[in-house]
Image (cartoon, rainbow, N blue to C red; front, side, top):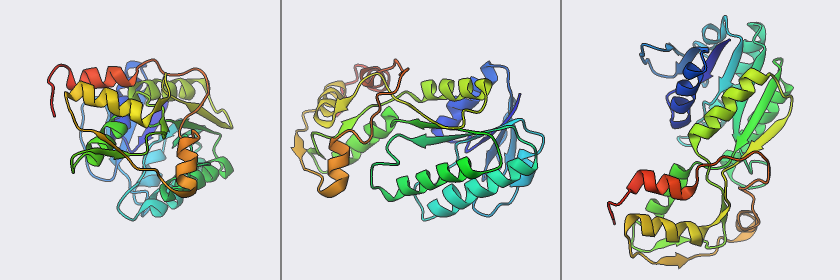
Length: 260
């Protein structure tokens, strides 16, 4: 199978490339900027403008669409219009399967970026290529970075009752690779980490791993956003789940350094 991976230079993209190579697939990786690598054919494709997209999908059996622009003001241009450009180009090239990575909660949690991801899902489903959508929960590195950012001024600031379900990106990569091999699903599946954590529980284990004494300053998120986050808008009961835990991520990241 010949697979194009968009957004291949990102955190998930690197895990996906390693997994697809280990599975023996022929991989073409696209990025907005020139890259090089001995084991992967890199091409330049810009979803925001369409430059290079037709060439990127040419000769491919499947497309694994990871590219996204959550920041920088180009989210609609890349995630929605760019996904449409990619789907149309893939259809014209005779691609047999388009797999799109999305996020658990895009249909429930009122975040502007999530609205664009949901619209991109709809573009994929309405497009000319047989499709699958995998919604994953948040990566542990995202939660780790969020906690570090919230603690810049001293205490860790957050809504103690918000629920999260960190999932290892390597396990998401394995799930995406399995979906490629299994073929188009024609619907949305969800995939989450092994355990659902309250924010205050995640903070306690994070502080312990870092040897930090910074207290939690509880701030309740108002409105519908807060209600959805506390009600589990970012978590899923779908099976199977990943196996690597938040504690595993913390042990790998901080070990016994006791960093503050």
